[in-house]
Image 1 (cartoon, rainbow, N blue to C red):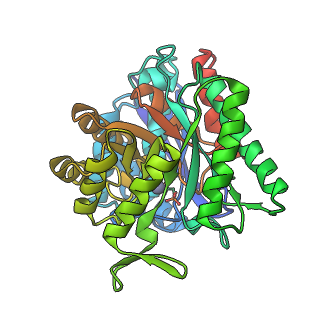
Image 2 (cartoon, rainbow, N blue to C red; image 1 turned 135 degrees about the vertical axis):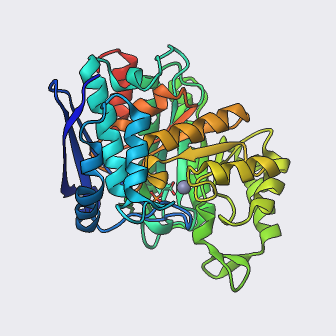
Length: 400
Ligand code: PGA
Ligand code: ZN
């Protein structure tokens, strides 16, 4: 292991054109790593804090960088502990989770570079043939990621029968293309949302028909099982004053929302449902999981925010059976690993995820392999999405 000599931070563009933080970590033996923070639009109330990029960089330069210089780049726990100590808050509100996560990822890559190992191996994983993370691909969406589109934030292709990473990645791209065909046949024009999914001006009910049709066509074509799932992002639909989920003119009480989602699981044979209920409602989550958790994944994103305390609370009441892992929700790779470990010990599946605002950083592809995660959620098309998918193909090909 060699010591960190330099940590540099700069503002770079994310996929929405906003400034984000990029970190470079250099070691005395010439090891190098670079990481860039992603950024959410439908952020959870309990996430670590993202500061404006310039503010975060200035604070990290002052408080974190001096503590990092001299640490061993490959000692991830010490690097991440130094970031926490430099910040001094629970939620990284002093230096910003954006600088923290960029540095944490850059240090991991520098540590890998020093020993000449691919990042996924350095982080502890080995790619085990058929046991690859299945990519969940956003093909239709709205919510906070597009205007005049569906209320449900994401309709996600789930190629669960794919024999290889490559087959799965291309199946998702085929579903994305098939959705365009089905929309075209219906005379529906569609722009794209922040993650590259189609954002057509149709009702949620019609979106279910369109995606189901597209998935059927691709399934026939590829010859393995392709299903689909949802990220409802229900915290964005929930109106606290009305105590109801608001879908434009239509509202649903919590009981009706549970009923609605449970019916969708059965009608469309959904493989995956993320954030079907409000981020504060563990009880309703538990009720839905009790009803359909034997035949679909109920995943907590805004509910758990990659936070072991919130996950523990969820495990205690049976709130879900899987967790979304977004390193920038919690601030460091060590924290993200801890969440995966707690999830795994309790029979929860882990889904390693991108954010709606992304860069060409490919760390999450390595993280998904390193943690042996069941799924990776990283869009379908668009350079910042394909960066991760293509890296996953390279990892499977042992070509990173
Ligand atoms: P976000 O959305 O990155 O805008 O928070 C992604 C998600 O909700 O999964
Ligand atoms: Zn989500």
